[in-house]
Image (cartoon, rainbow, N blue to C red; front, side):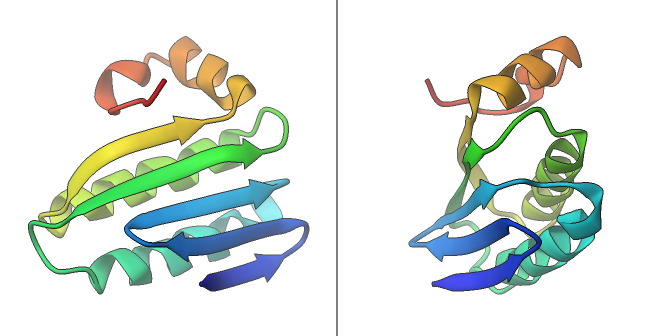
Length: 107
């Protein structure tokens, strides 16, 4: 189910996952974060969720900030973050920032 399509980026809800594709720059990051937060807050407490950013193009600190906001929201809403999928570029950035230890990264 599409939640947002703007400035070359799309956000969809696919079952229990938020899925992002395209270019995630700062011009769209706030909207992505807000739509994802609203979706997460609508999930029942105790349920599992996943974030799939494997379709994000390029290295994007904006996408990383969206991911961190969703992670904080999921924890605050008592949701289980079961998996995080990242593009290779986002994976390198996450590793470099030392955030890989904080996220359940999927292979």
